[in-house]
Image (cartoon, helix red, strand yellow):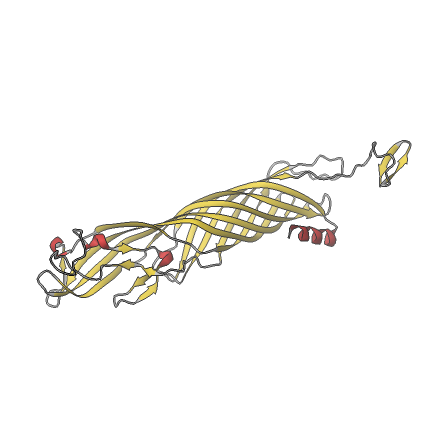
Length: 336
C-alpha cells in the first residue's frame, strides 16, 4: 500500500518522497451516543498513545506536501450515562405471606451506567500540509480488549392489591423505599470503525527557503484538534434483560418455591448494561435500550516525527572521479 501510494505520487507530480516514523498522544472527551433510548449521551474522558509511519510526497521544496499515515496504538477511557426517565417493572399475580394476590412493582430511579474501556487502535489517514497548516482525514479502527460496566440505581418496591392501591415501606413483605442497587460486570463492544478529521499546525521553525544547501529539519512536531465519529454500532451480539427481577415473590423459608436466602428480594435484582441489554416492559415484552450506540471522541493530539535517512545527490562530489553519473571539470566532479 505504501509503495503503491509512493509510485502514484511520484508518477503524477514527479514527487520527492520522504519517510518518517514517530509517535503520537492524545486526550479528549469520550461520548457514547445511544439512538432512540431512555439514556442521554454519555460524558467521559479518554487518552491514548501510539506509533506511526508517515510518507510525505510532493514537488521538491514546495510548501505543499501530501501525507499518508498508518500506525498502531492504544487508548483507555471512562464514560457515564444517566437514564433520562424512571423505569417500572411489575411481577403480576404474586402471593404474599397471607396468601393474598397482588402485583409486585419495582420503581428504578437515578440509574447510571458507567463504562471503562481499553482498546487497540489502528489509524489510517491521508492529508496534506501547506507551510505550517496541515489537515488529515481517514479511518480509525478500534478493537476493545477490556470493557467493564458499572450500574447503580435507587429501587423502590411496593405491592398493588385489588382492594388496596399500594402497600409501601413494609420490610416483612419485601417492600422498601430507595434501596441502593449496585453492580458491575465485564461486557463487550463490537469492532468500532471511526471516521476521523484532524486539523492543526506544525510547531517550531518551518523553513521557507529552498535549495540543496539549505539545512532541513529532520524532526517535525504537530499539534491538532481532532474528531472521531463511529459509524458502526457498538452493541454486543448478546441481548440480556435490562432489568432482571426474581420470577417468584416468596419470603417464606418453609415454602417449596423459596429460593432466596437473603433478607431482601432487592438483593436478587440484576441491572445489566446498555451495551448488551433490552428493556422489560410492564407486560413482560422487551425492547432494546437503544437501536444503536455510536462512538464519539473530540480532543487534542500531539505528534512528533523523525525523518528516516535518505540518499542525497551531491552538488559537488569531490570523491566521484571515474563515475559515469557526472563529468570532470578541472579535477572536480559536478553531478548532472
